[in-house]
Each structure stands twice: as structure tokens, then as C-alpha cells.
Length: 496
Image (cartoon, helix red, strand yellow):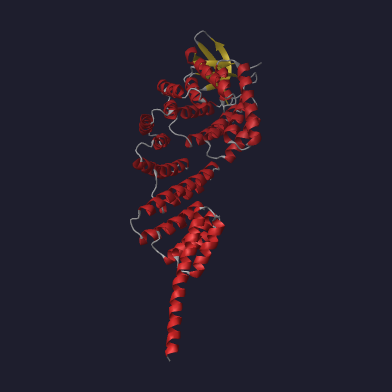
């Protein structure tokens, strides 16, 4: 009996010994795995941690180390599995939550990452590491959404771009850049209410974020609130006084309001801050052009020739100036230059809206309105909200004496425009021509171009020192119009 008791006691002691040694053996392999992990020997680390968890499946530190080794060796599924096991065993392991969320973020699974962090914050409230991880995850989430939405936006998929970015706000508090971008997308869709709301949110987060003020300036201009438009454009200049683009934007706004002197001052400042920027030089030249300061405009445009001779619409603008100056050979040469550069551009990008528009404009300039019409009508079908296409198409129809179509097309351009006086002036001129209903005279027709932008066709009956008498027709009815010399910009006579 005594021997039996001693035997049982020995078995118990042996079991206790084995248990103690076995548990220490699990810790031994876990420590060994840690050393391998520190030396970047991931295969050996996985082997050691694997032994540890087989010996002691509840050893959470071994599961955590195994997860880290899997992650470093590129086995993301294995890493995720082991992080989750760690969390189940030890639900207050900040390291496991943080690493799992980071792994999700690295694989663009941002919703899973944020869900993991929310779970952690419930178990471990107020932990600074988790707060920092959430902020970093939201930053990556916004960066990813901005990239994807921008690609959609550039591909003309504006309505798809908006929800891609907007969805982030349900999980993360917005930042100034995200609200600004969302506001810009809404502005592009002419959803001015949502655009204004998001741009103001950007400003509330960062009052010095002048990019938001710039878009608000455009937004209010489109809504014909020129007072607010100027206020926000000037605010952008005051906040970003070293950014040449702010002066350029304000100058262009003033140009659209036909306040040419003020516009030129701001655009000169933009050029002085960035003297080799072709965009700013072009803006300054365009102000001179619109203010009929043609010599100064030519000078600025010629500077662009040196920097970028294929600058979009440069040669069309020069051609228009030469037409106004009666230098027709130079005008034709410039239109042909524009055609050359547009054709090269269209070889690589056949649906480029700017190149197509400039191409149609130049074709019309060299008196090929039929070809120009074909290009412009295709452009309108591709980009039905592209205002410049309608302006060009209206010009083409007018040259083809399709005044009703010219008027209708210009009305469409007006719908897509802000408070721009030149479109209203062009509409008035076209309506007047439609009312006059001039028929071509059997002997040909002359054109009288007025300084107010209008042009009238008929047959010059008499030219005097101070005035010109133009014979016009309305159906079978004949009449005369008198134009004084100081109101005439130029006269183009028919080729008999």
C-alpha cells in the first residue's frame, strides 16, 4: 500500500514537473522567435513561434510575434489570422489592434481598419496610440479617395467622383483639403449649394486655406454676384500674397468684368512673381487684346512663342488681332500654325476638348467653315457642357449666314456662363442681324465692323469723310443704314 502511494505521488510530481517545463518550453520558443524577428530572420521566427503556439495555444505573445513575422514575410492572410487570435486571447493588446489596423490600411481596406480601431477604443478608451492610428488611417483613407475621385473627375465622371470622396466622411472627420475637393466637384457639376457648403467647411477648419476662397470667387461669379466674387478673390490674394496664381485669378476675374486697367495691374504682378509662366503671360496678353491694346498684346504673345510655341489658342489669338489690324496674310499664317499644332495634339488625344475647339476655330479662320462645323458639332456632342465649344460653333454658323443657329448656340453658351458682358453684346448683335435679315446682293456684299463688336453686311452705296452709307435688304425691301466713321472699327469690301 505504501509503495502504491509513493508511486502515485511520484506520478503527480512528474506531471507537475512536465507541466512547468512544458510551459517554460513554450516561452523559450517564443523568446527565440523574438530574437529571430529582431534579426529579420522571418522564416526561423515563424518556425519558433509555431512551436510555441503548438506547445501553448493560449500564449498570446507568441501569436502576436507570429503575426508580425507573417506580415514582414508578406503573408498578409496569415498575419491577419494571428492578430485576430491575439485579440481574442488578449482583448486589451494595443499592439495587436494597432498592427491589424495598419495592415488593413496598407491594403486599402480602410473600413476594416477603422472598425478594428473602434473595437480597440471600446476596450481601451483614451489610448494615445490608438488615437494616433485613427488619425493616420483617416489620412490614408482620404488620400486614397482623393486619388480615385480625381481620376474619375479627370475622366469626366464627376457624379461618380463625388460619392467616392463623400463616403469617407461617414467614418472620418473631414479635413480642409477633402472638403475643398468635394466642394470643387460640386462646383463643376453646377451644384452651387453643396459646393458652397463644403468650401465653407474647408474654411472653418483652416481659415487660411486660400484655395477654397478662389473657388468661392468663381462660384459667386457664376451666380452673377460679382461683389462676393471680388471679395473672395481679393481674400485669396491677401492670404497667399506670394502665390502668383492668386493675382492671375483675380486679374482674370476683373478682365471678365471688363475692368481692364485693374486686371492688367494684377496680371503684371503675377508675371513679376513668375516671369517664365506662359499661363500668366497669356492672361496679360489677353487683357491687352480685349482692351484693344493690340501692340502690347502682340508683344506678350510673342514672349510665349519663345517659351512654348504650341501654347493652346496662342496663334488663334494672334490671328484675330491681325484680322482686326487688317493684316490678313499674317492672320492666315497664324491660323495655319494653330491648325498644325492641333492636329499634332489630336493624333495622341483625339477627343481633347481644347485642341478640338481651337482646331475648329482656326479652320473657320482660314475660311473653311464646313470643316470647322463638323469638328465643332462633334465637340459639342462629346462635351455638352463645354461652353467654349458653343461660342466657337456660334461663330462658325454666323460665318455661314446661319443666323438662327448662331443665335441658338450662343444662347446655350450663355446658359453655361457667368456674368460676362461680351456674350450679351454678341447676342444683341446677332438678334439685330436676324431682324435686319440681310440678303446677299447679286454684286456681292461688304462688311462694316463696328467698335461695339457688331458687324453689318450689305453694299456700300456711298463713302464720305465722316460717314458711310450701307445699302441693305430685308426680303424684297431695300433700305439704307448710316454709320459714322468714329463708330467704325474696319470695313471689308466685297471682291467683285
